[in-house]
Length: 156
Image (cartoon, rainbow, N blue to C red; front, side, top):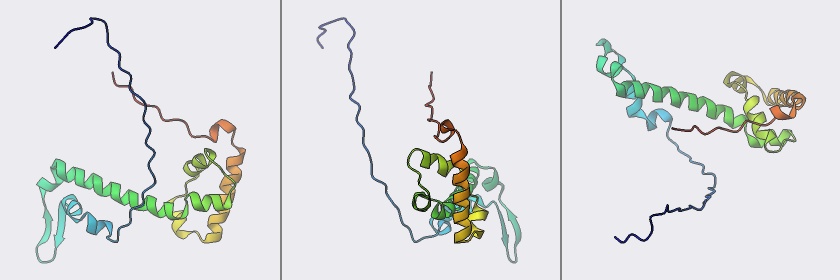
């Protein structure tokens, strides 16, 4: 190794931005079939005919069991969110309302309907909901029509 200078060395990295296309994944399996092992680990209490109620303390109190139950809750929430997304998405909102980015993102976040409403509402009810929500959105001040930027955490 040859030492040529005792001064500080500065190296600058170039910023490289990779924009990726949207990927749509389709799967014919249900979530219960796809994650059958996780669903089995999440069940610490089983009811079997002829054997009664079975409780497995190791499955209930173990880290793996707790993580499986948390993952199961997350999957159920994801299924609900996907049901909402089928009716309340960019395509349906832009077809009815004259919104452009970034107001469109703010509208989608601020006026996201509940799962009960999405399941029970007819097509006309859903249109009326969007129009009513848009009327409320127009009345907001300009600074509330844009989502706040996410702040990166600084680790010291």
